[in-house]
Length: 296
Image (cartoon, rainbow, N blue to C red; front, top):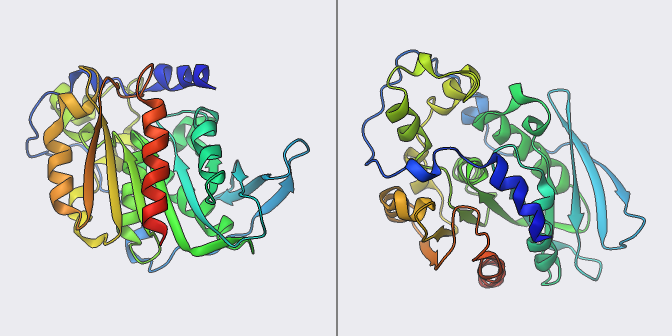
């Protein structure tokens, strides 16, 4: 499974090695605020979901849900028994196929927590690769999976890596009564400032780097404005190498830890942004321990 982490190494953030700049106020000249109607929604709506059995694994289900005409597909790893089970939804990094998270998901199902993996629409449709569209993807998956009889919709957790960590943070903070806890793995809180540092004129960001939709979307909100609303437990895992954001941009996570009412920073020695080749096993263990203590 670990060789699948190469997916993330290829598509990981280009800014991770350069995030040493201190945060500065961000001007949004040249962008259009496009934050979606999520701010007006009070709950994550139920969605129609299609579920099929996996021919080789009786505790694995395949599913699909739709969001604005896009079909989002993934898998659910289930514990032994009938449930209903607590559930953790995994949000992967920029453009990454969900399979790189398979072993960490299976470990959770072995510890009595259903684990949901899926691909964001932006994995195959680049125009859909923006933070708030991924937010809508995650909401659609939650809304569908939560309707299943063997899922405990009152015990929902989010797990997000890199850009997925920013997406998970947004969903958790916007719907704090529906999300019990969050595991955030080097979440991309520094991305806005890094892009602004590299391209002071945001309208000049090359489309080959980030699309205009991605830029407009990203600068339409400030995740720090929402953190105080999330009352559940939060753990933020950080690497310690020179390519890890926990090393290059620690101030972003220190600030988050102060704003979330209940948050812990955990640094995994020797880990980079992708927790490879060191740190992956520690990340799995830390995730399992966090969920166990937060479910009760």
